[in-house]
Image (cartoon, rainbow, N blue to C red; front, side, top):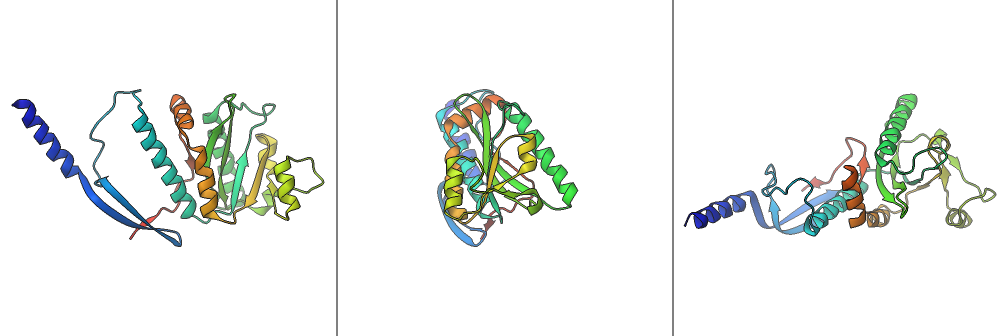
Length: 232
C-alpha cells in the first residue's frame, strides 16, 4: 500500500516536471530548426534521478554525447567563425598527453593576444585523442588578427592534405606564434558552416566521453559569451 502511494506521488512529481509531445522553433544565425520531442524537462527543473558518483551507463553516455554534439553544432551555426583550425602538439615543445594543461595554457595564450591587439578573439575547440593517448584539437576561431597568420606555400615541406588544397587554389594559413610554443597547426577560411559543423561533431564519440570523464575534463572548450540559438 505504502509503495503504491509512493509510486503515485513520484509519478505526479515527474509528470509536473516534464512537458510531453512538444516542438520548438529555434533560430540558428540565419537558419531555422524545428525540434520535436516526446518529452522535455521544464526549464528550471533539476535532475530527478541522481546516479552514484562514478556510475556511468550507456544511456547516460549517449545522452551526454548527443547533448555535446547539439551544443557544438549550435555554437558553430550561431557565430560568425572565420577559420576552421587544427592544433597539434610537438612532443619536443609540449606534453602531448596533458589535455587540461594544454587547454589552460592555450586559453591564457589567447587572452594575452586579446590584450596585445585589443580585440575579441573567440574560439570553440573539440579535443581528439590519438590511439597512443596524445591529444590534439579541431575547432573554430574568429577575431585573430591577420598579422598572426602566415600563408603556406607549395614550396614548403608540408603534409600531403595541405599541399593538395594549395594545388586546388585554397588558402591555408600557419599560426607561427602557436607553432613556436605548442606545435604544428593549420588554419583555413570557413566556406560552409553547416558542412564543417557536421564534420567536427564526428570526433565526439563514446571513446572521447570515457577518456574525458577519467580526466574530469570536457568534450569541448569555448570562449564566454558566444551567441546561442534563439527560441522563436
